Length: 240
Image (cartoon, rainbow, N blue to C red; front, top):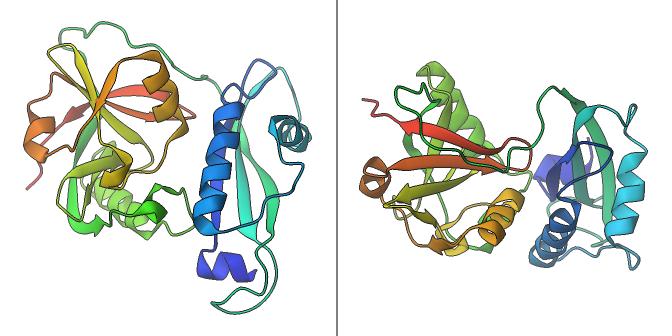
């Protein structure tokens, strides 16, 4: 096991390959740059969209299919907690093929529509600082939250921040709609700086504001977003 894997000194991108391309690659590159700056890692001087596209496409066995990849960016070198260098190294991992691609559309709400169920996980809380915006190797809160959700028969989970406000889903950002207005928690509330979050905010007028449990409970619609599934509508439920 590498030093970076042992101490969680890494971050990663989950990237979709669809219709012969990586549809959100520019947003992934921008987030990689922001994450590397926060974690004080040194990216290659030639790092760019073209560089990353060439690096990733070698992992695609069949360009006609839809694939999910994980790109791991870790701090290179040996050592213990204190790193001996700050250069970033990359590893592409093919996770598997998918039958459905990215959903970047939201239709009308249908009567009696059965939606995936989500509830609030309140055993642990996520801190509100810039490291929380990084999709890092420190994922224990998500592991514990999704473990709990599975035990409770839920489809996903809502994570609370240190102020006991909702900041995100188990592997997603959260949006809600009230009176035809879109909302999402700001990065200062502790969510991961999601790629699909940025994509949706470029397509819609979205107000960033803290999200109390009560606010989400009273929302007209709730959506979870990530770079693989796109936008997924969910139903808020109460769990004792």
